[in-house]
Length: 141
Image 1 (cartoon, rainbow, N blue to C red):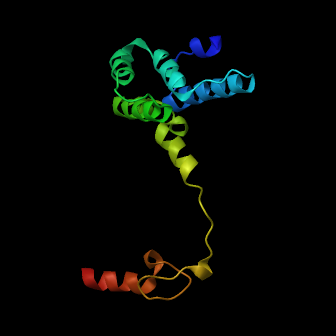
Image 2 (spheres, helix red, strand yellow; image 1 turned 135 degrees about the horizontal axis):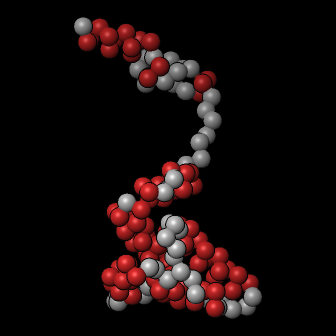
Image 3 (cartoon, one colour; image 1 turned 90 degrees about the vertical axis):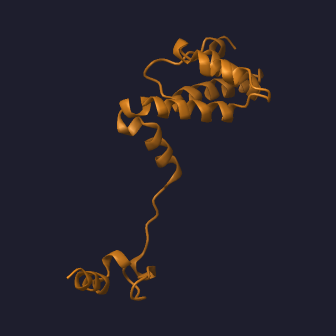
């Protein structure tokens, strides 16, 4: 519990890393038989923010409804993106890059199963259709 109480967000951490560290500590405590509820984790997360985020911390802590970790994380991500913190981090570590990598696993597609929306033939897409290109060139002239 001391590790969770002393959790602080360092300057080079982005919100995703910071919240992941908090959740990892929560999971370790649960495995040791000392579970931490979501509201307590959210309060601990807020208390570990740097002094420059005191206003956000106060607003979130004084909400009428119960504090939930997902709401706190979402608000912190919004603030981080607005402040431009994500832009100062390497692109691979940026919030958008991490979210995109996590959500979109690229699927391989077979050319045989693709149908062109321009000529209705199989094997290519409209952007690669020679008929579409020819029609566009004639229309430009």
